[in-house]
Length: 163
Image (cartoon, rainbow, N blue to C red; front, side):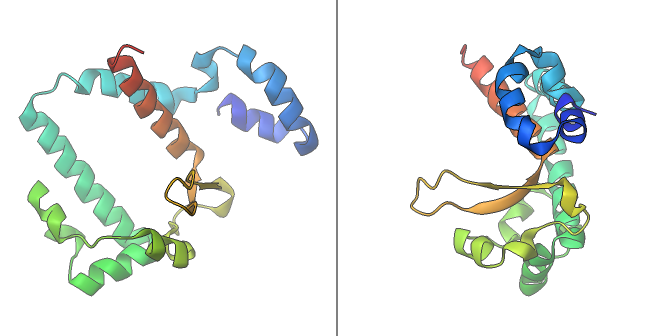
């Protein structure tokens, strides 16, 4: 359990923000980010040296898993894939990504509940929005793990540039 999850369970909601502002920055980063963050950072530091063949094999494996998960757990994707006649087992090569249907901001915005995984308990989901730089912010749900994953990728990218 991460420090954030522990605090959510132990500290009453009205006290969380003031405590977080004062104490959270004092907690060492290695504890704040949790195990998943550091596992992904280690993975990224190793994967940057993989050869092209290994990268493509990993990409295909992840693509197949994502399509299968989306098809089985996210009603909106299940509908889209069925609509174009794609099943998860149809993804054989990386080039098969071209057969997957596109989503648009409007589609996601207007059908938000259909693009939430039914395998995740509602208590694990956090509502967030984009910054709205294109005009209207897009709202969506994500898990705390997704946030840590995004941060691990962003931090690694910045480190690779020397910042």
